[in-house]
Length: 260
Image (cartoon, rainbow, N blue to C red; front, side, top):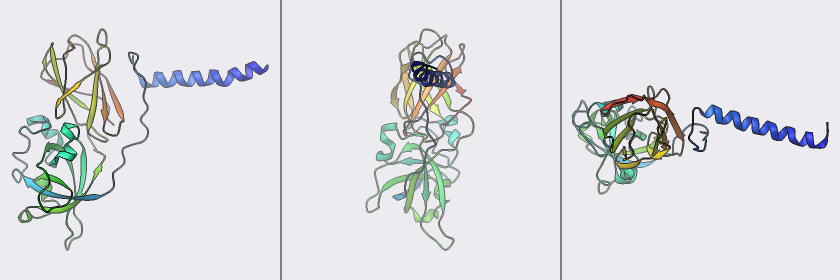
């Protein structure tokens, strides 16, 4: 074999591997760069915070509205173990959907823990208390402290969200103004960027955050099978290929087959 042939062989092998990686990405990417997610979300270190509670003992009064845009049946996706988080963790809506593990004050039975999803914005930190403020639902608060405590010091850390099933997309609006809510996101849980692509005329289009986890675009998406790409706070991405069929309808929720 000649020297030039020996040089070309590794190059051809590299090109073939790159081509196979692109195919593994799945579907027509419309020219968007392929991405690879390395590993899974890892929990943050423990830090100081404090917790209060709101709503009823069954979690009532915590799913109607809220600064994240989750409401009614959509809010129930996250169950009764949720929290309103202070402005620093809320991040003008970018922190919605993140999961936190809280450790309550020590007692005779040892430490008590609870994992909650951020679904609302809480007031700033309580005077005289350390760290970030978590305003928990009553069911969540009672897992780490007694109701009479009112406000308690906690340790907390951001952890991976464990979800059942794929990412869900709820679309409302009209052909000139589309609004999409993203829920049931695993991994980091907090959506910081969302793009949409149709199967024909609509190329990859960034959506804008309206508020909370509500995303909008004025591009006409009707009549196309829609694919969404979600990026979470740890910069990992998940693509929900053709999650909405060509005959999708406003006011309905569509679930992807995969999650983070």
